[in-house]
Image (cartoon, rainbow, N blue to C red):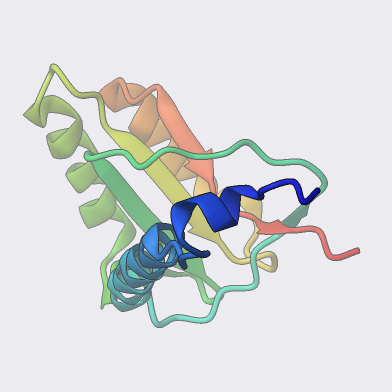
Length: 141
């Protein structure tokens, strides 16, 4: 006596395409997001310091990213700005919208002395910015 299988009762096996469609949609979203972030990434090559641990970072709608390259050169996006203009920009953006605090992200080259970055930290403290983050690259194993 033969035991009937589930496939024989249903009339054969059918291919379920739902997971495949989900994966395709996730890939499309990933590539759209990657293209968006690649366009917004500064062009200046900065050698970021390495870290042994990291926290997962959520996207902040009020983020000001300042890149400090060797020289020292201060950039916001791809535009080079003097340090005093950036300090004034930190103060004005910190006062701009009180319900969402400003996040200051500093991308400093490994070769830049701390004395070049310190005035940005002082300007952030004077403006009341409590969320200051340094961009780093993960430690290579």
